[in-house]
View: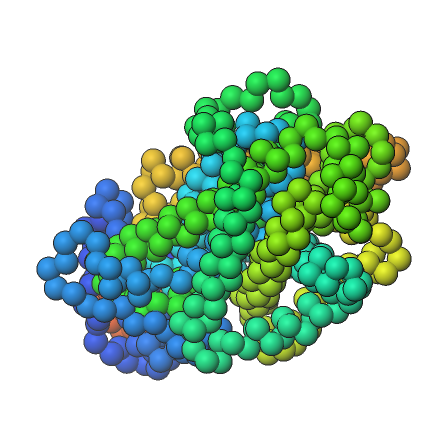
Length: 615
């Protein structure tokens, strides 16, 4: 059982979540104004929000201060209105268009430079054989994004806000730090991608460190586009996705991959003659596609639509349209990823360095020295990928590739900054200006990247992507376990969906941990092994804590202190108690049972009893 509750003196959203109400309780109408109450109930109007959308599970009820300012106002200047239509049958295109936006912003995380590099390496190392892994990872990602969107729609709060209200201070701060690490790691990948794109577009005239510095400036410019309206901002993101579709689609049409091999690789879950290299690449695909900060981002973005959560029909409708939009958006992102995999599978699978060197040398490419004169298999990254495309298919292929990478980096940078803002404000209740927030994240992301760009070569810069993918994989449980915890409430998910979601998250975490182990063992250093062992103990301890919280939530064995204090405050005034019960259309015994239940649990956990002070 959960409490999403703040004192009346707090300006943040104030909710009480009572998941133990009987299924027969339905409170769709708004109640009357109640009088002054003792404690925290002074001068409040109780607004009952029923978020139950399944007939097989009890409703979820929220008490919310009516005059509370919407938290999403801190992020967007406006909310997008949803058209009302009577006697709606099937899918309304007008409503779908109104809900279109958050899913496409979310899908950009599936198209960041880290994903593009994973795609091209998959094609170059495993041909078309791992396309089914990409498809499966995208489907899993869709299921997780559905959880995130559903949490935001049903509760009116995003994941970071819910974590702030449920977890205690120390674990909450640790969780925030872990998510921030994931965001900064993703930001570094995006900065690297943009710097490489600028270098390719300028034929090397803009050095890598120069591209890193340019990224600082353009990020500030683009981030203030939302001043012109939310829909215009979403349209700009749509433009960047369209640019990626056109550029990578051009490469696809130029190379003309074997369609039969492509379809077989996509729908036949088998990898013939695959070894450790291909297995590691398959794990890397999952780690690159499913990103932790994206769960927090999507749960916040869905709050930008006007949805009356006191209306069960509107809540159910919003969940439906957000899921449709997310499906379309992730299909587009999957298509773009397939373009990249197919191009490098068709053109560069089993190519050797000497072959590529000879072709580049014949075309007069200034980059032929990148490829050693040996018969080893070609190793590609974002930078070499553009060079190789230019050597084999002409300069246009190189420049178009660079434009696509630049669009991927810029769009991901912007959504990453929004993620950081949501996470910081949700976990810490800090209200920083966007300028200050961008300045902080840019500095943390650019400082190490700039040092590598100045003092090391391109190989070291692109090699950072492997480390950053491992870093993101390690942070994944800190998004997946909380989202499953809070969507395990009966009012949010059916039992079948909870079990399925738990299995999906278990599989994803296991795959990513394997990826981390493979990376660490390849370092071949005793000191690093010892350090990794100590870090693993701390890491697994905290993951165990989150799993324990999930178990308590799943079995309804935890009442937050906020809810405890709230109920005690109600009981201090008999008249107020009865008015609250009447307002909620509940019997006094319902609240009394809640207290008795808490006392039974508290007696096993050395908690002081909650005294029923009714007169």
